[in-house]
Image 1 (cartoon, helix red, strand yellow):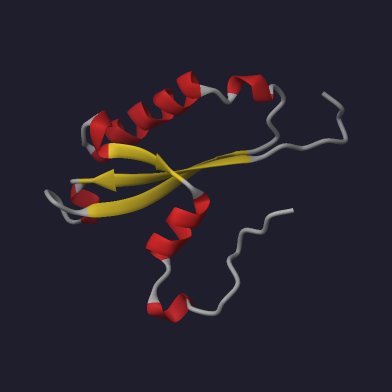
Image 2 (image 1 turned 45 degrees about the horizontal axis):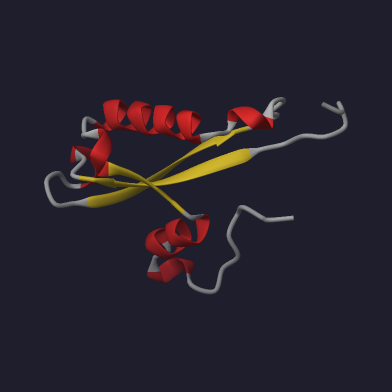
Length: 93
């Protein structure tokens, strides 16, 4: 890859039933970011499945309780009343 190109990727997740977010019946949100990716072909379904397994293990839930969601869904779900009208820290180019 061209050394002048830098690729970053962020995966957004909805997590159900995690103690960190309130336990059984709760829904929480998290993300995983990766910077300076050299081989984008490795950002595939296997990679996403592996990330879901890691998150489920860290948060003590089933892999079935972790779902990949869009950035828009993440922002909508995590925006609080104090965040309305403010620009997100993450910017798309």
